[in-house]
Amino acid sequence: MIRIRRLDEPAVLEVKKAQWDRAYQDRRAKKPDAKAWSSQYGHEEIKRRLQAMSHHKCFYCERSVKDGCEVDHYIEVAERPDLAHEWRNLYLACSECNRVKQPNKVVPVDQCLDPCDVSVDPAEHLAFAADLVQARNNSERGRNTIQKYALDRLELESERRKQLLYFMTAYTEVLSTMNHEGRQAMRDDERELLRRFAQPEAPFSLMFRSYLERHTL
Image (cartoon, rainbow, N blue to C red):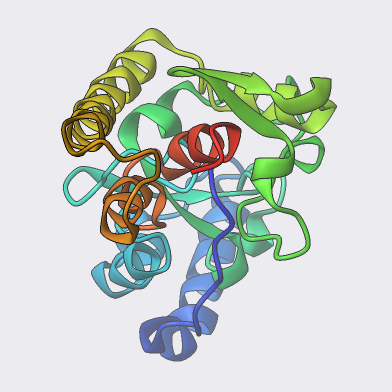
């Protein structure tokens, strides 16, 4: 999870939100547990804006979601039906994070990290030992976030491990070149090559940011 800056509300929401809200209220009046329609809150224009915000990654786990992404309600519609079409409540999730996340009655969302909270850097609460995510300095918000979105699930660890292997291959090649040329320090272009793994658009960039900082790269 990395900090995400929310872009302006998509035009389709500005035009359609009030209409969609009224229709949803009418459905709930007849059937209180009626669900909001994903064809509306998950409209392609909304999805594209969320993808642009997150560099085409899941807001929660940072997995690439160019395909198979879903629009998620940060605060569950069952709790706040009035936020079903509210722009600030719409997030982008991979299908797996959306499926496995714990409900608020188990892990309240207000006790977790919010990637769209500009005042909090997830890197202050989450860290990595190789591909294993941990709560930095035993952060309670970090622990809650890992639990809520199952950021420590095996298939995610496997994907992070694969990306880490790509990084280690590049790192080993840089060290080999330095050794061959008898250098003690990396060139700027070599550092830049490794730092690309921690750029916001890279999958699992927080993991690599944590690794680079730990090794002063």
